[in-house]
Length: 227
Image 1 (cartoon, one colour):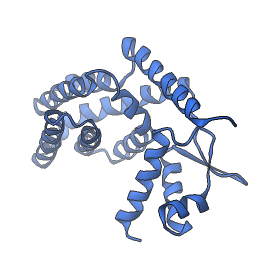
Image 2 (cartoon, one colour):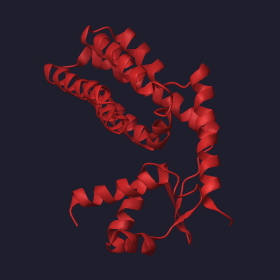
Image 3 (cartoon, one colour):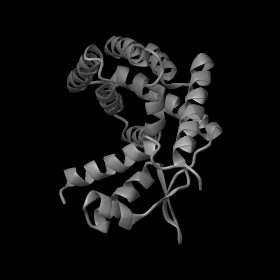
């Protein structure tokens, strides 16, 4: 099985977790998954380990892999830390970015623009991730890049929830433009401020996020049937 195929398998399981096919605390049986996807248990085990490193799955003794359970308060705390990582990355990128960094950020920003023009929220979600990763790279702080990338991936399913908000894709892209302008103008403080506000969940966004989480839980419970 190729690396690309393994990544595809991981993405499919991740998508089912995000989509609510598996409830928090539910066991992910390796054998059942292997039979469903027509593969051996080894790539399934590898996929579950990768998802565990992202915080989507927990590997427990005698229970195997289960879907991770993260409370609302913990999620908000994680987004607060993510906002600070992004803020720092933006400030450093404004001072340290090279011509190559500038070209990559522009490329990723253009890809986001194309997704917005096509009204393709799924593609925008993926291009948005690449855009942020380009900023981490432009910070030229490898430790920050590693930590920001790890937390970004752990929050991935919950960032998807934010995409449900009305006009969120268009709002997000408008904020991206401000971020690009600040970084390319070498205005570290502005880049830091815009990126922090871009990520942090506050005010009406906080209420919308909590409501979205509750709707997601209710939808999963309704679809789970009797125990």
